[in-house]
Length: 561
Figure 1 (tube, one colour):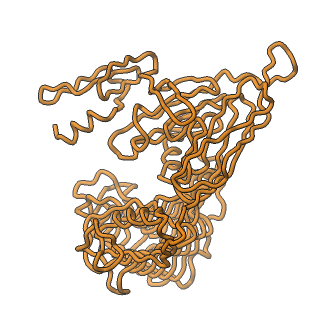
Figure 2: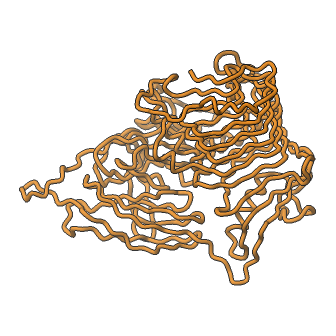
Figure 3: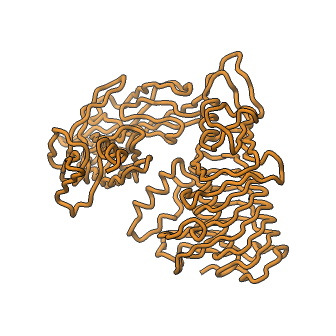
């Protein structure tokens, strides 16, 4: 057993299928810590004993209270106002939790669940580090008393008003404890659940302790747990504190070089860094430093080859732009996948509105997927909906107000060159087919112009094999695709799916491409039973501008099954 795996087993808790009754893991004569519960989990051995679905108890502390919470690791039932810990014994950063329906139960950044009202909710649990699979937990909230203020002997006094007292402005990194006033004072159940509208900006725990995470505005909601549906809200603006002598950068230039060193500051060609990860790290540090005011940003990339880089990009400078560009137009820096080990070159993981990130004259080659512009902070909403709707009658791609609130927008690609994308070029023995060169999901008002999509394909046979150049899905709206080249694309060069409406496609060139057509729509109603979904603005003939030219060996026209 490798040292890395041994360390992993010593510090993590794993979930194994319920069908496995007992497991004993022995490596080199050593028994690795084993712990069995009704949830069939194993991890570091300890002296706690399982009792029902409670594996142990953990004491949580903050500046307001000490909580001793039941640690639940399987499906359970709680009363409204009850709090349970579903963290699997992991700390923040090693697990993320999300409620499928915050109207029934909410969950904070410590994975503490608070029951709100009658119903069943799924708590989606994920390991952001990718070290382990953690089963979700279904929580039934039950025994909510029916509101009855008629004065009878069984009458319960429900909450009819909640007001929140706290500061409306917080500095980055600060914390504050919110106070609530409940009316009437003799309400039977005064328990409150807390929720943040955007945990990327500020989190709130189960005791109303708010932590400012990034600059922006957020709504903190206090929810009654007595079945009344009464809520209170406070708007909080998170601001960066700057000193009177702060240095302003407009623009701030950061430099990359194939021979750069990531420990350098990146502020000049002579002190260039090598990786996109280093660029993001330095931007985060500079933007949170009160000695600097950062406005527009340029990432200037020297020509040459950058091998095996893959970045999950979450940094956005609200109100300003970020541009990744070649040092000189026409001299394209090349990002080359490392023999298939680099999955996607650039993934935008941001769901807070305008992101305003541009890419100019960059070559991307030998990746499974070249780029992905995805709405939804940290992908959580999308992944949650996938799990929640799995096996049900509806598609997780359907429109929801939550999705509409977590889009990104205003991104631009110009003069990009995408070459040899898909598992045909990256995996000698693929088990999964790629679906797109450029994936655009819940991202809007983007512009893809004067770029080249050349050689995109998979080697897996069957219906899943065709690979599309640009895949617009899940409310990817008002995007413009113009003056691009599409050549040797095994799938349909431009594919719409599920609410990808009001997009403009014109003055493009198509050569030897298109499985069903060079603009196609795969809409929900034709693929799954999505009778609850009504899609608007299907692709029309206007999408095929008469200026779309050079269509040799391509299937022409629209196709919408």
